[in-house]
Image: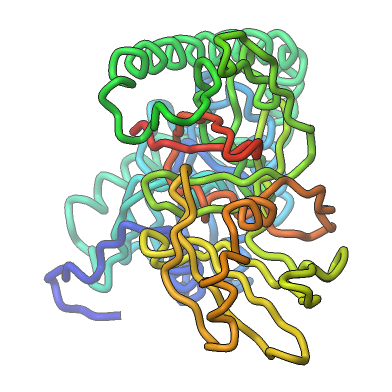
Length: 411
């Protein structure tokens, strides 16, 4: 590490610091101290990088609001003690600091938790020594102000948290559902006022009445995927539309079926597995010979279909036709919620397919119609690759009797 007393902008990171923390801890010669009010099993994974000779202390805050519905935090502290780590309680602590050998510092907003790794966080890791600075003097004062924590104390706290879990969970759910309802009502009101002027909602199409707000929800510790949840009063599989005669009809999407979805801001698409309360799994490609070959113009073809992931404002769909006679032809289309627009195709042998209208709107709609894919064990959730923001408004349209979910970024 450098002994230069100037910090570089290269030491500031608006990203997950986990692996940089591991590297810093691995370089420790004498000591590691972590100051944080929030932690889970992530902190114990980090500390495995330290050698056996290094003295390790975790300074945390065992105040009620820090332990609210956080028995996993207590479990992580118990595990740390069993691993030889000394735990200390410091009232009022809110800083998140990693200090190595009483010299080198990492400081920022990121908690030492799995959720902290997925949030939008920022921090820095020093490559210069803070030895002899007032900053380290204050940290030393905090350390001596803290009180030792035993497994006996932690087990008593865990018992209290567990005893009140059901009551706390009910209150928390009621509160969160109230917030969801307020957000949903607010955005529905805004949408109602603005829908006449919105280019997003084409009045030619048939829309469901109302909308749903879905919010990104972080997984429990040790899980590595996101989900988007609707509020308690919303059902993602139940919709109401007004038909051409002005009569309201119920639309029911099949739970656990995959339906096409469109992120309107990026024009990226994917098949989304529907659940009444959440969406987690997506698929962006399939081979049609998983079921059967398709006949086009009197010839049978294998079809490979993909929703594209890059440059999706130019084209968001690619499919390939293949047989022994014509070989392979690639077709690129942009679907905007209303129509399919041909962007380009490769292989002149398929030119007649375009000129004769064999690649019709009905055929393209057939390709994106819902199919019941199986979700194999270990299949990546990846919903954040389609929906990277934290909150979306969801609408549903019908394109030639094919339900298509439209996701509109609300933040």
